[in-house]
Length: 239
Length: 239
DNA sequence: CACTATCAAATTGAATTCAATCTGAGGCAA
DNA sequence: TTGCCTCAGATTGAATTCAATTTGATAGTG
Image (cartoon, rainbow over all chains, first blue to last red; front, side, top):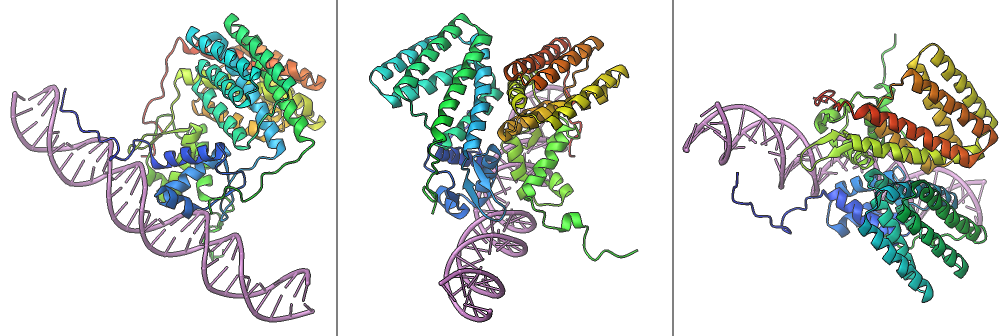
Protein backbone atom coordinates (compact mmCIF):
# COMPACT_ATOMS: atom_id res chain seq x y z
CA UNK A 1 0.00 0.00 0.00
CA UNK A 2 1.37 3.31 -0.96
CA UNK A 3 1.50 5.72 1.86
CA UNK A 4 3.02 9.11 1.57
CA UNK A 5 6.73 8.42 1.90
CA UNK A 6 8.15 9.48 5.17
CA UNK A 7 10.77 12.13 5.11
CA UNK A 8 14.24 10.82 5.29
CA UNK A 9 16.28 13.68 6.65
CA UNK A 10 19.55 12.04 5.85
CA UNK A 11 21.78 14.06 8.08
CA UNK A 12 19.52 15.08 10.91
CA UNK A 13 18.60 11.49 11.64
CA UNK A 14 20.93 9.24 13.56
CA UNK A 15 22.80 7.18 11.02
CA UNK A 16 21.46 3.76 10.31
CA UNK A 17 24.64 2.11 11.44
CA UNK A 18 25.20 1.89 15.13
CA UNK A 19 27.61 4.09 16.94
CA UNK A 20 30.03 1.38 17.95
CA UNK A 21 30.26 0.22 14.37
CA UNK A 22 31.16 3.62 13.04
CA UNK A 23 33.67 4.08 15.82
CA UNK A 24 35.24 0.71 15.10
CA UNK A 25 35.45 1.54 11.40
CA UNK A 26 36.98 4.91 12.05
CA UNK A 27 39.52 3.63 14.54
CA UNK A 28 40.40 0.70 12.33
CA UNK A 29 41.05 3.05 9.48
CA UNK A 30 43.22 5.22 11.68
CA UNK A 31 45.23 2.21 12.74
CA UNK A 32 45.56 0.75 9.26
CA UNK A 33 46.69 3.97 7.66
CA UNK A 34 49.07 4.76 10.49
CA UNK A 35 47.45 7.77 12.11
CA UNK A 36 47.50 5.60 15.20
CA UNK A 37 50.86 3.94 15.49
CA UNK A 38 51.46 0.45 16.86
CA UNK A 39 51.78 0.58 20.63
CA UNK A 40 49.98 3.89 20.89
CA UNK A 41 47.86 4.24 23.97
CA UNK A 42 44.16 4.83 23.49
CA UNK A 43 42.63 6.93 26.20
CA UNK A 44 38.92 6.30 26.33
CA UNK A 45 37.94 9.71 27.61
CA UNK A 46 40.01 11.49 24.99
CA UNK A 47 38.77 9.47 22.07
CA UNK A 48 35.18 9.64 23.24
CA UNK A 49 35.55 13.38 23.50
CA UNK A 50 37.06 13.64 20.05
CA UNK A 51 34.21 11.73 18.48
CA UNK A 52 31.60 13.42 20.65
CA UNK A 53 30.22 10.23 22.09
CA UNK A 54 30.16 8.67 25.50
CA UNK A 55 32.59 6.00 26.51
CA UNK A 56 29.98 3.28 26.26
CA UNK A 57 29.87 2.76 22.49
CA UNK A 58 33.58 3.49 22.27
CA UNK A 59 34.33 0.66 24.64
CA UNK A 60 32.16 -1.63 22.57
CA UNK A 61 34.17 -0.67 19.50
CA UNK A 62 37.43 -1.32 21.32
CA UNK A 63 36.27 -4.78 22.30
CA UNK A 64 35.51 -5.56 18.68
CA UNK A 65 38.87 -4.27 17.52
CA UNK A 66 40.53 -6.32 20.23
CA UNK A 67 38.79 -9.42 18.94
CA UNK A 68 40.15 -8.61 15.50
CA UNK A 69 43.62 -8.26 16.94
CA UNK A 70 43.93 -4.60 16.04
CA UNK A 71 44.23 -3.43 19.62
CA UNK A 72 45.41 -5.02 22.83
CA UNK A 73 43.31 -4.73 25.94
CA UNK A 74 45.00 -5.06 29.26
CA UNK A 75 42.61 -5.32 32.20
CA UNK A 76 42.42 -2.08 34.13
CA UNK A 77 45.19 -0.70 32.05
CA UNK A 78 44.13 0.75 28.82
CA UNK A 79 43.81 -0.20 25.21
CA UNK A 80 46.81 0.04 22.95
CA UNK A 81 47.18 -0.30 19.24
CA UNK A 82 48.53 -3.79 18.72
CA UNK A 83 52.17 -3.97 17.82
CA UNK A 84 53.07 -7.16 16.06
CA UNK A 85 56.31 -8.92 16.60
CA UNK A 86 58.23 -10.21 13.62
CA UNK A 87 56.89 -13.66 14.40
CA UNK A 88 53.35 -12.29 14.30
CA UNK A 89 54.08 -10.78 10.92
CA UNK A 90 55.31 -14.06 9.55
CA UNK A 91 52.26 -15.84 10.94
CA UNK A 92 49.98 -13.30 9.35
CA UNK A 93 51.72 -13.63 6.01
CA UNK A 94 51.24 -17.35 6.01
CA UNK A 95 47.54 -17.00 6.73
CA UNK A 96 47.15 -14.36 4.06
CA UNK A 97 48.89 -16.69 1.64
CA UNK A 98 46.47 -19.49 2.36
CA UNK A 99 43.48 -17.21 2.00
CA UNK A 100 44.73 -15.59 -1.16
CA UNK A 101 45.41 -19.01 -2.63
CA UNK A 102 41.82 -19.97 -2.02
CA UNK A 103 40.64 -16.65 -3.43
CA UNK A 104 42.59 -17.37 -6.57
CA UNK A 105 41.13 -20.83 -6.96
CA UNK A 106 37.61 -19.51 -6.62
CA UNK A 107 38.23 -16.43 -8.73
CA UNK A 108 39.55 -18.52 -11.61
CA UNK A 109 36.19 -20.25 -11.68
CA UNK A 110 34.01 -17.23 -11.16
CA UNK A 111 35.64 -14.10 -12.49
CA UNK A 112 33.63 -12.20 -15.09
CA UNK A 113 34.91 -10.85 -18.36
CA UNK A 114 34.55 -7.31 -17.02
CA UNK A 115 36.62 -8.10 -14.01
CA UNK A 116 39.23 -9.73 -16.22
CA UNK A 117 39.40 -6.51 -18.20
CA UNK A 118 40.04 -4.59 -15.04
CA UNK A 119 42.85 -6.94 -14.15
CA UNK A 120 44.35 -6.52 -17.61
CA UNK A 121 44.19 -2.77 -17.25
CA UNK A 122 45.84 -2.91 -13.84
CA UNK A 123 48.48 -5.15 -15.32
CA UNK A 124 49.33 -2.41 -17.81
CA UNK A 125 49.38 0.10 -15.05
CA UNK A 126 51.83 -1.98 -13.05
CA UNK A 127 54.10 -2.25 -16.06
CA UNK A 128 53.99 1.49 -16.59
CA UNK A 129 54.71 2.04 -12.95
CA UNK A 130 57.72 -0.19 -13.25
CA UNK A 131 58.90 1.69 -16.34
CA UNK A 132 58.60 5.05 -14.61
CA UNK A 133 59.83 3.69 -11.30
CA UNK A 134 56.63 4.79 -9.60
CA UNK A 135 56.48 2.57 -6.56
CA UNK A 136 53.35 4.08 -5.06
CA UNK A 137 51.42 3.59 -8.26
CA UNK A 138 52.63 0.02 -8.47
CA UNK A 139 51.49 -0.75 -4.94
CA UNK A 140 48.14 0.74 -5.65
CA UNK A 141 47.57 -1.24 -8.82
CA UNK A 142 48.87 -4.35 -7.13
CA UNK A 143 46.44 -4.05 -4.28
CA UNK A 144 43.60 -3.29 -6.64
CA UNK A 145 44.38 -6.49 -8.52
CA UNK A 146 44.28 -8.58 -5.40
CA UNK A 147 41.07 -6.85 -4.44
CA UNK A 148 39.44 -7.85 -7.70
CA UNK A 149 40.52 -11.43 -7.21
CA UNK A 150 39.08 -11.39 -3.73
CA UNK A 151 35.81 -9.97 -5.00
CA UNK A 152 35.66 -12.44 -7.86
CA UNK A 153 35.94 -15.28 -5.37
CA UNK A 154 32.35 -14.48 -4.30
CA UNK A 155 32.90 -15.70 -0.79
CA UNK A 156 31.96 -13.07 1.79
CA UNK A 157 33.43 -14.97 4.70
CA UNK A 158 36.72 -15.29 2.86
CA UNK A 159 36.62 -11.58 2.18
CA UNK A 160 36.05 -10.78 5.80
CA UNK A 161 38.83 -13.01 7.03
CA UNK A 162 41.21 -11.76 4.38
CA UNK A 163 40.56 -8.12 5.09
CA UNK A 164 40.95 -8.70 8.78
CA UNK A 165 44.41 -10.23 8.46
CA UNK A 166 45.43 -7.83 5.73
CA UNK A 167 44.47 -4.99 8.03
CA UNK A 168 46.84 -6.31 10.65
CA UNK A 169 49.67 -6.34 8.16
CA UNK A 170 48.88 -2.85 6.94
CA UNK A 171 48.78 -1.59 10.50
CA UNK A 172 52.24 -2.99 11.09
CA UNK A 173 53.31 -0.58 8.36
CA UNK A 174 54.85 -3.38 6.49
CA UNK A 175 56.21 -2.13 3.22
CA UNK A 176 57.81 -4.54 0.81
CA UNK A 177 60.44 -2.18 -0.46
CA UNK A 178 61.25 -3.88 -3.69
CA UNK A 179 64.60 -4.21 -5.26
CA UNK A 180 64.42 -3.55 -8.95
CA UNK A 181 65.09 -7.23 -9.41
CA UNK A 182 62.32 -8.50 -7.17
CA UNK A 183 60.01 -5.97 -8.71
CA UNK A 184 60.62 -7.41 -12.15
CA UNK A 185 60.04 -10.85 -10.74
CA UNK A 186 56.75 -9.79 -9.22
CA UNK A 187 55.63 -8.45 -12.57
CA UNK A 188 56.34 -11.80 -14.14
CA UNK A 189 54.31 -13.47 -11.46
CA UNK A 190 51.44 -11.14 -12.18
CA UNK A 191 51.58 -12.08 -15.83
CA UNK A 192 51.20 -15.69 -14.83
CA UNK A 193 48.34 -14.81 -12.52
CA UNK A 194 46.48 -13.03 -15.28
CA UNK A 195 47.10 -15.85 -17.72
CA UNK A 196 45.82 -18.47 -15.32
CA UNK A 197 42.75 -16.37 -14.60
CA UNK A 198 42.04 -16.16 -18.31
CA UNK A 199 42.59 -19.87 -18.71
CA UNK A 200 40.53 -20.51 -15.60
CA UNK A 201 43.16 -22.82 -14.21
CA UNK A 202 41.87 -22.87 -10.68
CA UNK A 203 44.28 -25.16 -8.88
CA UNK A 204 47.35 -23.77 -10.58
CA UNK A 205 46.38 -20.21 -9.77
CA UNK A 206 45.97 -21.19 -6.16
CA UNK A 207 49.48 -22.61 -6.13
CA UNK A 208 50.95 -19.57 -7.84
CA UNK A 209 49.30 -17.17 -5.43
CA UNK A 210 50.46 -19.14 -2.43
CA UNK A 211 53.97 -19.09 -3.89
CA UNK A 212 53.65 -15.38 -4.67
CA UNK A 213 52.90 -14.63 -1.05
CA UNK A 214 55.63 -16.96 0.07
CA UNK A 215 58.09 -14.99 -1.99
CA UNK A 216 56.98 -11.80 -0.34
CA UNK A 217 57.40 -13.48 3.00
CA UNK A 218 60.90 -14.64 2.18
CA UNK A 219 61.97 -11.17 1.21
CA UNK A 220 60.42 -9.82 4.38
CA UNK A 221 62.27 -12.30 6.52
CA UNK A 222 65.54 -11.64 4.74
CA UNK A 223 65.18 -7.91 5.25
CA UNK A 224 64.11 -8.17 8.85
CA UNK A 225 66.76 -10.54 10.08
CA UNK A 226 69.30 -7.77 9.60
CA UNK A 227 67.52 -4.76 11.07
CA UNK A 228 65.26 -5.14 14.07
CA UNK A 229 63.33 -1.96 13.77
CA UNK A 230 60.66 -0.97 16.22
CA UNK A 231 58.13 1.76 15.82
CA UNK A 232 58.99 4.62 18.16
CA UNK A 233 56.62 4.26 21.09
CA UNK A 234 54.31 7.06 21.96
CA UNK A 235 54.17 8.24 18.39
CA UNK A 236 50.65 8.87 17.29
CA UNK A 237 49.20 8.65 20.75
CA UNK A 238 45.90 10.18 21.52
CA UNK A 239 47.34 12.36 24.24
CA UNK B 1 28.85 -28.07 58.23
CA UNK B 2 30.22 -24.62 58.13
CA UNK B 3 28.28 -21.62 57.01
CA UNK B 4 29.90 -19.90 54.12
CA UNK B 5 31.41 -16.63 55.20
CA UNK B 6 31.38 -15.33 51.67
CA UNK B 7 29.43 -15.82 48.55
CA UNK B 8 30.31 -18.68 46.32
CA UNK B 9 33.91 -18.17 45.31
CA UNK B 10 33.21 -18.37 41.62
CA UNK B 11 31.19 -15.20 41.46
CA UNK B 12 32.66 -13.32 44.36
CA UNK B 13 36.24 -13.31 43.19
CA UNK B 14 37.06 -10.62 40.66
CA UNK B 15 38.13 -13.00 37.98
CA UNK B 16 41.26 -12.24 36.07
CA UNK B 17 39.45 -11.99 32.76
CA UNK B 18 37.03 -9.22 32.07
CA UNK B 19 33.32 -9.69 32.25
CA UNK B 20 32.60 -9.23 28.58
CA UNK B 21 35.19 -11.84 27.72
CA UNK B 22 33.68 -14.45 29.98
CA UNK B 23 30.23 -13.65 28.67
CA UNK B 24 31.39 -13.93 25.09
CA UNK B 25 33.05 -17.25 25.85
CA UNK B 26 30.00 -18.59 27.60
CA UNK B 27 27.59 -17.49 24.91
CA UNK B 28 29.86 -18.75 22.16
CA UNK B 29 29.96 -22.12 23.84
CA UNK B 30 26.19 -22.15 24.14
CA UNK B 31 25.85 -21.36 20.47
CA UNK B 32 28.46 -23.84 19.34
CA UNK B 33 27.08 -26.73 21.32
CA UNK B 34 23.53 -25.93 20.35
CA UNK B 35 22.01 -24.77 23.62
CA UNK B 36 21.21 -21.64 21.66
CA UNK B 37 19.80 -22.57 18.31
CA UNK B 38 20.41 -20.66 15.08
CA UNK B 39 17.91 -17.85 14.76
CA UNK B 40 17.16 -17.79 18.46
CA UNK B 41 16.44 -14.37 19.84
CA UNK B 42 18.73 -13.07 22.56
CA UNK B 43 16.99 -10.82 25.01
CA UNK B 44 19.55 -8.64 26.73
CA UNK B 45 17.67 -8.23 29.97
CA UNK B 46 17.04 -11.94 30.31
CA UNK B 47 20.58 -12.98 29.58
CA UNK B 48 22.03 -10.29 31.79
CA UNK B 49 19.75 -11.48 34.57
CA UNK B 50 20.73 -15.08 34.04
CA UNK B 51 24.42 -14.26 34.30
CA UNK B 52 23.89 -11.76 37.10
CA UNK B 53 25.51 -8.88 35.30
CA UNK B 54 24.30 -5.62 33.90
CA UNK B 55 23.54 -5.20 30.25
CA UNK B 56 26.69 -3.18 29.66
CA UNK B 57 29.27 -5.97 29.53
CA UNK B 58 26.73 -8.26 27.90
CA UNK B 59 26.28 -5.84 25.05
CA UNK B 60 30.03 -5.66 24.64
CA UNK B 61 30.13 -9.43 24.37
CA UNK B 62 27.35 -9.42 21.80
CA UNK B 63 29.25 -6.94 19.68
CA UNK B 64 32.27 -9.19 19.71
CA UNK B 65 30.22 -12.23 18.80
CA UNK B 66 28.60 -10.26 16.00
CA UNK B 67 32.04 -9.39 14.65
CA UNK B 68 32.85 -13.09 14.69
CA UNK B 69 29.67 -13.82 12.81
CA UNK B 70 28.14 -15.87 15.60
CA UNK B 71 25.20 -13.53 16.13
CA UNK B 72 23.37 -11.04 13.98
CA UNK B 73 22.58 -7.61 15.30
CA UNK B 74 19.74 -5.69 13.83
CA UNK B 75 19.61 -2.07 14.92
CA UNK B 76 16.92 -1.48 17.50
CA UNK B 77 15.73 -4.99 17.04
CA UNK B 78 17.61 -7.50 19.03
CA UNK B 79 20.45 -9.90 18.65
CA UNK B 80 19.84 -13.31 17.18
CA UNK B 81 22.01 -16.34 16.90
CA UNK B 82 23.27 -16.33 13.35
CA UNK B 83 21.69 -18.84 11.07
CA UNK B 84 23.83 -19.67 8.10
CA UNK B 85 22.42 -20.33 4.69
CA UNK B 86 23.68 -23.28 2.74
CA UNK B 87 25.82 -20.89 0.73
CA UNK B 88 27.35 -19.59 3.94
CA UNK B 89 28.13 -23.15 4.95
CA UNK B 90 29.88 -23.84 1.68
CA UNK B 91 31.84 -20.60 1.99
CA UNK B 92 32.90 -21.52 5.49
CA UNK B 93 33.98 -24.96 4.41
CA UNK B 94 36.19 -23.55 1.72
CA UNK B 95 37.87 -21.19 4.17
CA UNK B 96 38.35 -23.97 6.69
CA UNK B 97 39.91 -26.05 3.96
CA UNK B 98 42.42 -23.36 3.09
CA UNK B 99 43.31 -22.84 6.75
CA UNK B 100 43.60 -26.52 7.50
CA UNK B 101 45.80 -26.96 4.45
CA UNK B 102 48.16 -24.34 5.78
CA UNK B 103 48.03 -25.90 9.23
CA UNK B 104 49.08 -29.19 7.71
CA UNK B 105 51.98 -27.65 5.84
CA UNK B 106 53.28 -26.01 8.97
CA UNK B 107 52.59 -28.98 11.20
CA UNK B 108 54.55 -31.28 8.94
CA UNK B 109 57.56 -29.07 9.57
CA UNK B 110 57.05 -28.50 13.25
CA UNK B 111 55.24 -31.38 14.88
CA UNK B 112 57.09 -33.00 17.76
CA UNK B 113 57.56 -36.71 18.30
CA UNK B 114 55.18 -36.57 21.26
CA UNK B 115 52.49 -34.98 19.18
CA UNK B 116 53.02 -37.56 16.49
CA UNK B 117 52.48 -40.24 19.09
CA UNK B 118 49.21 -38.65 20.04
CA UNK B 119 48.13 -38.64 16.44
CA UNK B 120 49.06 -42.30 16.11
CA UNK B 121 47.04 -43.09 19.18
CA UNK B 122 44.06 -41.20 17.86
CA UNK B 123 44.44 -43.03 14.60
CA UNK B 124 44.02 -46.32 16.45
CA UNK B 125 41.04 -44.92 18.23
CA UNK B 126 39.39 -43.92 14.99
CA UNK B 127 39.94 -47.39 13.63
CA UNK B 128 38.41 -48.94 16.72
CA UNK B 129 35.50 -46.56 16.48
CA UNK B 130 34.97 -47.67 12.93
CA UNK B 131 35.14 -51.33 13.96
CA UNK B 132 32.58 -50.82 16.70
CA UNK B 133 30.54 -48.40 14.65
CA UNK B 134 30.92 -45.74 17.33
CA UNK B 135 30.33 -42.54 15.42
CA UNK B 136 30.59 -40.21 18.40
CA UNK B 137 33.95 -41.63 19.35
CA UNK B 138 35.16 -41.27 15.79
CA UNK B 139 34.13 -37.65 15.62
CA UNK B 140 35.86 -36.96 18.86
CA UNK B 141 39.13 -38.59 17.82
CA UNK B 142 38.89 -36.93 14.44
CA UNK B 143 38.53 -33.50 15.93
CA UNK B 144 41.32 -34.17 18.38
CA UNK B 145 43.59 -35.06 15.49
CA UNK B 146 42.85 -31.87 13.65
CA UNK B 147 43.38 -30.00 16.89
CA UNK B 148 46.85 -31.44 17.28
CA UNK B 149 47.70 -30.49 13.75
CA UNK B 150 46.48 -26.99 14.40
CA UNK B 151 48.54 -26.79 17.55
CA UNK B 152 51.60 -28.22 15.86
CA UNK B 153 51.40 -25.48 13.26
CA UNK B 154 52.57 -23.04 15.96
CA UNK B 155 50.75 -20.13 14.43
CA UNK B 156 48.44 -18.43 16.92
CA UNK B 157 46.76 -16.25 14.33
CA UNK B 158 46.00 -19.30 12.23
CA UNK B 159 44.58 -20.98 15.31
CA UNK B 160 42.35 -18.04 16.04
CA UNK B 161 41.02 -17.79 12.51
CA UNK B 162 40.51 -21.51 12.27
CA UNK B 163 38.62 -21.74 15.53
CA UNK B 164 36.47 -18.82 14.58
CA UNK B 165 35.30 -20.37 11.32
CA UNK B 166 35.08 -23.81 12.80
CA UNK B 167 32.83 -22.40 15.50
CA UNK B 168 30.47 -21.10 12.86
CA UNK B 169 30.24 -24.52 11.29
CA UNK B 170 29.68 -26.20 14.63
CA UNK B 171 26.95 -23.71 15.47
CA UNK B 172 25.19 -24.56 12.24
CA UNK B 173 24.92 -28.04 13.69
CA UNK B 174 26.53 -29.45 10.65
CA UNK B 175 27.02 -33.13 11.10
CA UNK B 176 28.77 -35.14 8.41
CA UNK B 177 26.68 -38.23 8.83
CA UNK B 178 28.98 -40.67 7.22
CA UNK B 179 27.99 -43.53 5.07
CA UNK B 180 29.98 -46.60 5.96
CA UNK B 181 31.72 -46.14 2.65
CA UNK B 182 32.74 -42.53 3.14
CA UNK B 183 33.78 -43.37 6.63
CA UNK B 184 36.20 -45.99 5.35
CA UNK B 185 37.48 -43.47 2.85
CA UNK B 186 38.05 -40.91 5.55
CA UNK B 187 40.06 -43.44 7.53
CA UNK B 188 42.27 -44.01 4.52
CA UNK B 189 42.78 -40.29 4.21
CA UNK B 190 43.80 -40.14 7.82
CA UNK B 191 46.37 -42.83 7.23
CA UNK B 192 47.86 -40.71 4.50
CA UNK B 193 47.79 -37.67 6.75
CA UNK B 194 49.68 -39.49 9.47
CA UNK B 195 52.20 -40.89 7.00
CA UNK B 196 52.89 -37.47 5.51
CA UNK B 197 53.28 -35.98 8.96
CA UNK B 198 55.83 -38.66 9.80
CA UNK B 199 57.64 -38.10 6.52
CA UNK B 200 57.38 -34.36 7.03
CA UNK B 201 56.10 -33.86 3.52
CA UNK B 202 54.81 -30.37 4.01
CA UNK B 203 53.41 -29.45 0.63
CA UNK B 204 51.83 -32.84 0.03
CA UNK B 205 50.13 -32.80 3.41
CA UNK B 206 48.71 -29.39 2.61
CA UNK B 207 47.27 -30.73 -0.61
CA UNK B 208 45.83 -33.79 1.06
CA UNK B 209 44.17 -31.78 3.80
CA UNK B 210 42.67 -29.38 1.32
CA UNK B 211 41.36 -32.35 -0.62
CA UNK B 212 40.13 -33.96 2.60
CA UNK B 213 38.03 -30.91 3.38
CA UNK B 214 36.87 -30.68 -0.19
CA UNK B 215 35.58 -34.22 0.06
CA UNK B 216 33.62 -33.32 3.16
CA UNK B 217 32.25 -30.31 1.35
CA UNK B 218 31.18 -32.40 -1.63
CA UNK B 219 29.31 -34.82 0.57
CA UNK B 220 27.69 -31.91 2.36
CA UNK B 221 26.54 -30.38 -0.89
CA UNK B 222 25.24 -33.68 -2.16
CA UNK B 223 23.25 -34.22 1.00
CA UNK B 224 21.89 -30.72 1.18
CA UNK B 225 20.77 -30.33 -2.38
CA UNK B 226 18.06 -32.87 -1.65
CA UNK B 227 16.72 -31.69 1.69
CA UNK B 228 16.53 -28.00 2.51
CA UNK B 229 16.25 -28.25 6.22
CA UNK B 230 15.89 -25.25 8.43
CA UNK B 231 16.24 -25.15 12.15
CA UNK B 232 12.85 -24.57 13.75
CA UNK B 233 12.80 -20.91 14.76
CA UNK B 234 12.21 -20.00 18.33
CA UNK B 235 13.80 -23.21 19.56
CA UNK B 236 16.32 -22.56 22.26
CA UNK B 237 15.32 -18.96 22.73
CA UNK B 238 16.17 -17.16 25.87
CA UNK B 239 12.58 -16.34 26.56
C1' DC C 1 71.97 7.31 45.98
C1' DA C 2 68.93 3.49 45.16
C1' DC C 3 64.96 1.41 46.61
C1' DT C 4 60.50 0.83 48.62
C1' DA C 5 56.03 2.20 50.65
C1' DT C 6 52.21 5.10 50.27
C1' DC C 7 48.48 7.60 48.53
C1' DA C 8 45.94 10.94 45.54
C1' DA C 9 44.73 11.51 40.81
C1' DA C 10 43.74 9.29 36.63
C1' DT C 11 41.73 5.67 34.30
C1' DT C 12 39.18 1.73 33.44
C1' DG C 13 35.09 -1.58 34.57
C1' DA C 14 30.40 -2.12 35.27
C1' DA C 15 25.72 -0.61 36.95
C1' DT C 16 22.23 2.49 36.51
C1' DT C 17 19.54 5.85 34.23
C1' DC C 18 17.47 8.12 30.51
C1' DA C 19 16.15 8.40 25.52
C1' DA C 20 14.91 6.44 21.10
C1' DT C 21 12.85 2.86 18.57
C1' DC C 22 10.35 -1.17 17.76
C1' DT C 23 6.50 -4.55 18.48
C1' DG C 24 2.11 -6.11 18.95
C1' DA C 25 -2.65 -5.77 20.71
C1' DG C 26 -6.70 -3.57 20.11
C1' DG C 27 -9.81 -0.15 17.79
C1' DC C 28 -11.89 1.49 13.71
C1' DA C 29 -13.37 2.07 8.99
C1' DA C 30 -14.35 0.05 4.49
C1' DT D 1 -13.84 -10.08 7.95
C1' DT D 2 -9.65 -7.59 6.43
C1' DG D 3 -6.51 -4.14 6.57
C1' DC D 4 -4.69 -0.06 8.53
C1' DC D 5 -3.80 3.03 12.38
C1' DT D 6 -2.58 4.18 16.97
C1' DC D 7 -0.39 3.90 21.18
C1' DA D 8 1.34 1.62 25.41
C1' DG D 9 4.64 -1.53 26.84
C1' DA D 10 8.85 -3.80 25.77
C1' DT D 11 13.38 -3.51 24.17
C1' DT D 12 17.46 -1.60 22.54
C1' DG D 13 20.98 2.45 22.27
C1' DA D 14 23.74 5.56 24.59
C1' DA D 15 24.89 8.76 28.53
C1' DT D 16 25.77 9.14 33.14
C1' DT D 17 27.11 7.62 37.54
C1' DC D 18 29.50 4.96 40.78
C1' DA D 19 33.13 1.52 42.08
C1' DA D 20 37.57 -0.76 41.51
C1' DT D 21 42.18 -0.65 39.99
C1' DT D 22 46.32 1.27 38.20
C1' DT D 23 49.77 4.82 37.89
C1' DG D 24 52.98 8.10 39.07
C1' DA D 25 54.67 11.35 42.26
C1' DT D 26 56.51 11.84 46.68
C1' DA D 27 58.52 10.91 50.95
C1' DG D 28 60.89 7.95 53.81
C1' DT D 29 64.53 4.40 54.78
C1' DG D 30 68.62 1.68 54.42
